[in-house]
Amino acid sequence: MAATKKIVMSGIRPTGFLHLGNYFGAVRNYVRMQDEFECYFMVADLHSLTTHPDTKELKGNIQRVLAENIACGLDPDKAAFYCQSHIYETSELYLYLNMLAYKGELEKTVTFKDKVRLQPDNVNAGLLTYPVLQAADILLHRAELVPVGKDQEQHLEMARNFANRFNHRYGETFPEPQAFNYGEELIKVPSLDGAGKMSKSENQMATLYLSDDDDSIRKKVMKAKTDAGPSVPNAAKPDYIQNLFLLMQLVSSTEVMQKYDAAYNACTIRYGDMKKQLAEDMVRFIAPIREKAEAIRNDERYLQEVMEKGMEKARRSARATMEQVREAMGLNYF
Ligand code: TYM
Image 1 (tube, rainbow, N blue to C red):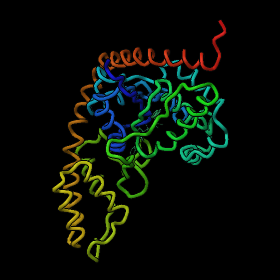
Image 2 (image 1 turned 45 degrees about the vertical axis):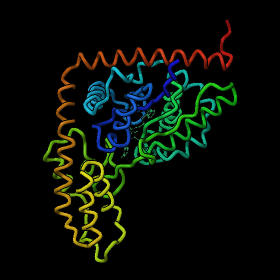
Image 3 (image 1 turned 120 degrees about the vertical axis):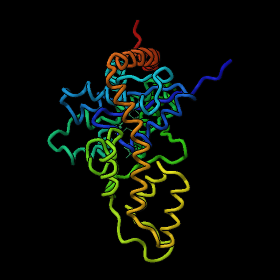
Image 4 (image 1 turned 180 degrees about the vertical axis):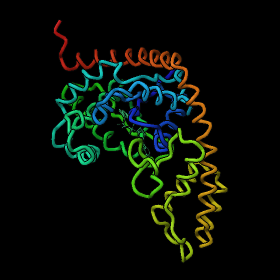
């Protein structure tokens, strides 16, 4: 008998253009995992309503996220690639899990506190229960592995807590989901100004998008923060310099990376040269993805087919889980 494959689930909000952080934190893993596991990848349009209630541009943004993921190598014939709002069972599980989530823990969530700061006039209940909806997305497929960047670590810990509470109260139903990255540590791709991380909607001049043209990539990289260079050999790297090395590690060859690392340690580094090299390697990395994504985006019919196929597969899995959930909870009265 064939061994059953582990189940993988993850999601991306359609709140802006995908960037290098999304690629290295999430999409790169999706592309590898689709060959090894049973995968469910989703465009989290419901989550986006917590911060972007205007839906005028939502359809276009969803299509962009689909196209960009496929351009990066996600294969809708291997992984179910679907839209969160098409899976109605999500809302049901979200409701049940909400009864197992406590106000105090939700208020302490780092992403909630960030959002309260960013949008003090719209601290809606959806924002507070954001991690519960995310747990519903994951548990709905009984996923064990969740490829995400470092910023999602706390949400995964909460998903485990909700799963455990459910199992404890109603009987063993969900496995414990774990955040996953090939290469042990979860990743945080820093922004080019040395302040924070690359982001879809904030920090746009310091974020490299998969849709950036060659000149914007060069401009952004050349503006990255540096200083006069180290004055003693083998000095510790300040954060913003460490960031440049990290980006170089992501897109340049090992030899290039080692050359600049050695120059840094010998105090002979020229940051202008390093940034030029990084900019060209970045252009070489991003340009083919951008071009492919543009072509895919123009094929609306294909994107529709992808969404429909993904929806059907995700619905099958969701329905099977929810039957078990209702049974476990004793909500089967007939
Ligand atoms: P979102 O849309 O903010 O980000 C999508 C994925 O990209 C990762 N990421 C990063 N990784 C490294 N460095 C960065 N600078 C960086 N910025 C973003 C994120 O960690 C994420 O993996 N709540 C989720 C969406 C979601 C979800 C889910 C994820 C909804 N339901 C279920 C997993 C499972 C979010 O807002 O991701």
